[in-house]
Length: 331
Image (cartoon, rainbow, N blue to C red; front, side, top):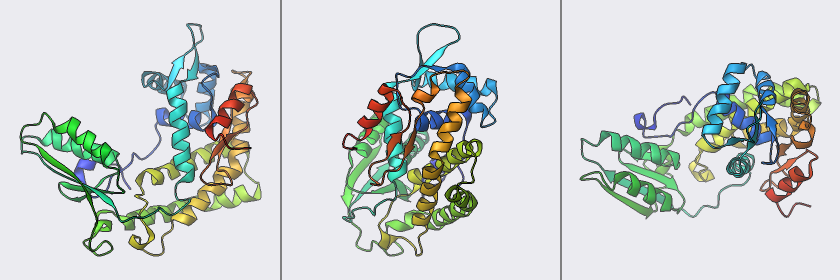
């Protein structure tokens, strides 16, 4: 599952491997801070990233990049600076956490529908061809053949919009977006052949093996808060790649045995058992620089209803209100 340009391999989209300080900071803040009202001192951010062996210089660079991306904003002009998550970041994090924590909970409702994109770009349009492939990969399409891409489901609007934006000024370019069904859906020439399901199954099995010891320790309650913070974040970072890569095909298109359910149970055992410990460690690390840390720091957990992950912890009224707004029907 190595990272590479989707243009180099039209069979399967790939995700970036490894966590940069910028990505790590976004992951930690998204998991443990669920309010745009919280004032977060830069010193607290540096102390938090130090838990992951990120230097002060790299932490400041990561913070600066997230500010430029609009996920974090400075509060006023004071010194030292104080930051807060933006409303855009909060909405994005909640959506992503729902996706990560509910992925694989239920089999997809399968109708046999696929969206198919076919395009033709003249030879001089190599840059446009690469841009189309990158865009389709981001929309979770996969190359069935060189210029024929597919995605399960029936929502064709995102692909239609992307192709129109990318190719409307490319001379000689043609494209079509179709709703299709395969006569031999499960055969060797069917849509499943476009995916490297063997590599995906191996990655799931590797995940299970990698976190087996931690899963046992989490169940037995032998993980320290310091270890819990780093280990839980590592498990989340590993699991989120599956939620982005796995096309979530119906069972009749998957090889047997398919290890996703065991991998999901491994992840949820770790994520649920270590949540409070990781939160406690974050509070401990941040409080010397941020006295209100315990009021704002929270953590997401998978609900007993797998369709409703929810943040928990934190005592500030604004944080509690925001937590409830993620799932208004939680009692």
